[in-house]
Image (cartoon, rainbow, N blue to C red):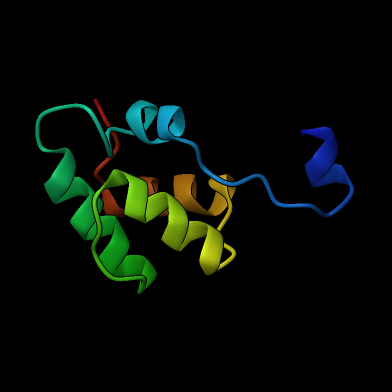
Amino acid sequence: MAETEARGEVRFASMSDLRELGLAGCGGAAEKRAAVCKSLGIGYGNASAMIKKLKGFGIGIDELREEVEKSGTHKR
């Protein structure tokens, strides 16, 4: 567990996190992003907009990873 998470602070997703999760920079990323954004209820956006929306809604990287796994869109 990261030190910031141990103190109750949320670590938000970065562009490299989105690439790692298959939500940016690869084939089908837009469709995967759309599915995850819809399930999170934050509205669709490009990768940069998604990062801003995740921060705005207080959705951290751990919650995003869980949602990607649930949606079955994780990069294989």
